[in-house]
Image 1 (cartoon, helix red, strand yellow):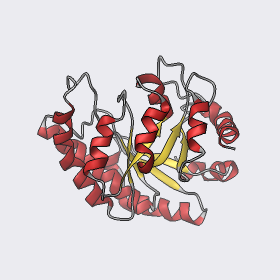
Image 2 (cartoon, one colour; image 1 turned 45 degrees about the vertical axis):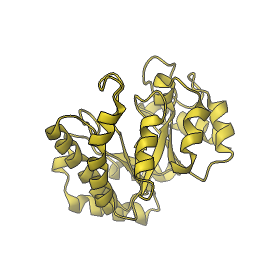
Image 3 (cartoon, helix red, strand yellow; image 1 turned 30 degrees about the vertical axis):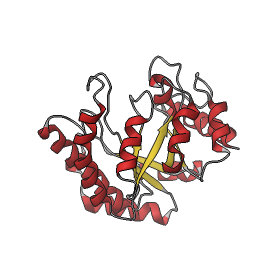
Length: 242
């Protein structure tokens, strides 16, 4: 799909975040990945990778589930290296309801998973953890503190914040400012993950723009889920970031 969209990508003047679906990742040929990475480089199209996440639980209580999760994450990370990606985005998997608020249970089980993923990534590939169901940043801070000497970073997703956060944008981002590497910019109305263009929902983009005035040149990734909204998403994001 990325190859088929090369000319379109060149016309848009953007890079691409490549998602490896759970059900195709085992069938992906590493030679094809290397070839794609070469083609992207030749066309000066930067890329990042988004690892699989459906059904996965990097900090799961069940050891077998963790093993499957680790396998998927390591494969995506390996492909990110072959592509020459700027980073690989992963979901940390904490859900306050599923863990009955027991952050320590999730954290203890998570350590081994991320240690192995970071080894697979090596020193040149940032591993970025994205906020999903977290309503405040404490669990992510636990991981970043533990791996403070490692290449582990934060990806802030505006849409997920708008759905689940109980605190302000600043209360999320200021404690994590030194770990920020990427932003997923999309919008919704606080009821479902609509993946709308910037400014067409209820996310507080004005607060985010104030924070970005002091940010350290992060990556910005748009996530339109409808091809019909790609142009509008890019235009609105450019206007927001200028």
